[in-house]
Length: 89
Image 1 (cartoon, rainbow, N blue to C red):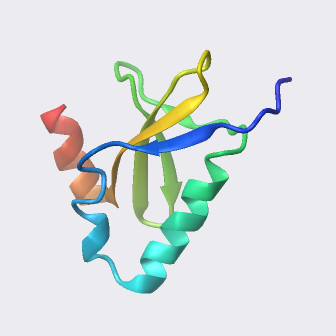
Image 2: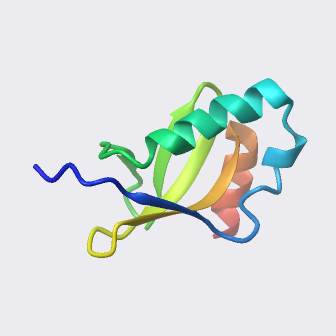
């Protein structure tokens, strides 16, 4: 198994909901973003190009590119915000 670190990139607009969260929630999410640098098994949606990681009630939607190894974060928000964002994709 390949255990190389991944690079986490934040796509424009990723923080629309994030900047509204309180500081403790933001810190919790930043810890999860740091964990995304490690090899993980994330939830893949059947007809979606996005992977989803959960941290408490919050969702982080990102794309994996195994060849170049970035994880591109497209969305961070709570479950309700995630459902709205996903429907717009």
